[in-house]
Length: 170
Image 1 (cartoon, one colour):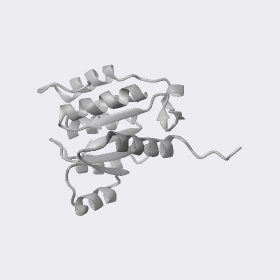
Image 2: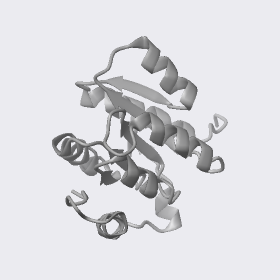
Image 3: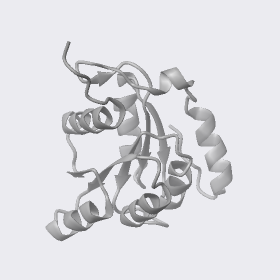
């Protein structure tokens, strides 16, 4: 699991996390699917303060063929996501340093030319928060506790839109 240790500088954490994430060559960066699952590398950043949840999501996604990295706070998530190398960000709405909503707004402003798909995770069931997140540019919104099957469906849906233009039928 690529998590920053408490007291670790953001730059040191980035170096540590980057070293644990595979850096695919260009042909490997495009995911193809088999039954809706990736068979090649798509880069996913999971951001949240709960290490157990981060580890669970990573343990679930790794065997499915995703290259998964983790950030334990909003500041680190911002730094990592701004690299432009991630296809998907799974973002906890409530995190230290920068909350998920703040991370989302900053990323949408700074990454205007890189379309990173974002799934927001929260235990907050208020419709007002859901509407605010949608206005801020979240692509999907899941309520905790999440179903891993539902997470799989959302990831496949978002990455197919982002990485696979519809091809005409033969």
